[in-house]
View 1 (cartoon, rainbow, N blue to C red):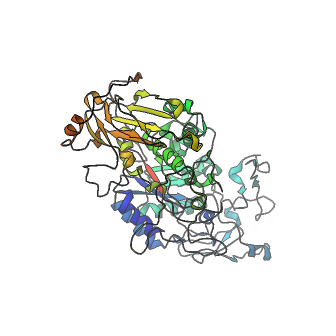
View 2: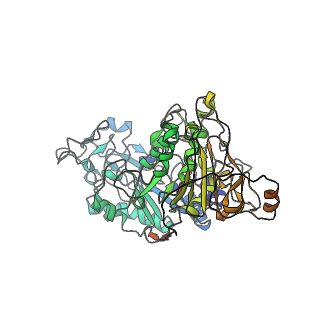
View 3: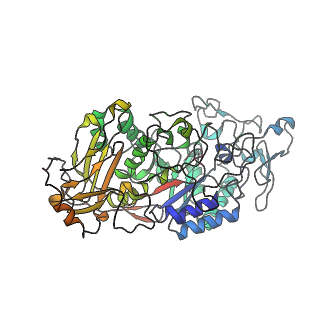
Length: 559
């Protein structure tokens, strides 16, 4: 709910350097307990099961004050599917269905609400022979053979959901009014649900009524048109996360070094054009599936999200913070059938303690835990907070050294530029192949001598005194590792911004035996890092800035 998001901005997101929080659609929606209820809007009232309009405004103000921008998932393509009562009224011009805040709607109709006029079949795409019927998107092939011209799915209904005629100026004005209200409240970024089902010119005329800081579109595959890229916004690219999953989980351990060649996701889309997620609601699985990154993978999933932040490639990445499920349609904790009008259980209890799942230690999660309907908050798992700062310091730097170690045992390390170092050990399965820790003593990192915080071990930077860390790495002359190891299924990340006070470093070095330097494989790279600025819809974002979007409402449809 909005109160939880506001609190999370103050207590975790802001203090740990996360730049924005993405929230599910904020408009009034159908009455239903499923996750997808919020993606079936009934009106443009800012009242939903997440909270009231006032609570939403307070959340936005609180997050902005904490240095966290708010990104809203907006649904501009359609209206909610008609309720069962519509079948009993036929073609009558009535609105027998009710939304979450009491607004009435029907089959391609909405009743008048304060500030918003009634809408009828003429405002939706429909057949020329019947304004209450429209062509359909085939749910199996995603083709639209009945459209005119054939396979123009921007005119058709998906899964029986009425499709707004976004070519009409009156509809564009209505949708633009909604976006302007969000912007005036303080929302600075949007995600466009079902963007491919709206013509690029029509979508551009709607979204560009407001000078957003950032826009990205739901996208699945294929090369978008130049006009869509130029006049609408960026894209969600799911292929980058899939490549991380393949490298760390699915492929043979001997292929692990190839992961350092990762530069992009979908071919044809540059990192500057996209946002990279790892997990998303569309990839829910009932049981643990190693090919699909979800919290059910436990430690295995955690390593993947850590690598998403630790690898210097990519421009903007998005983290995931959601809940556990036992049913693929299940809404957040507190919302389950048959209770259609539900109240989500707060993330924080009465004492102000979060109810999030602890950081996992096994792969996969225990089956009972994996199927518990509770808040998971993957973005809070230990190490994520520290790695956000690491990404901001190291993003865009070239990989200048790499160690393949014993690749058959899944170990790998690299230096980015002359300031950042990462070492990881892939978890091996089955249990008979457990390897234990990987000692990295002797690796020549190239970083300055000293005692470093392994930022991948930090649970939060809020209240951290900067003097010690859960895990530390000690570097001697020439940046050679004198003490440090990588736990199986984990990674170590250090950078020059995480150098700890050196009063104890010299004493610690004297007590350790000198180790031999392990030869590294030098990778050709520029001798200096070139900085650049990238415009994010009216803002200038330095190259070292990452946008880490954390889902703090429900992990809902089409992020």
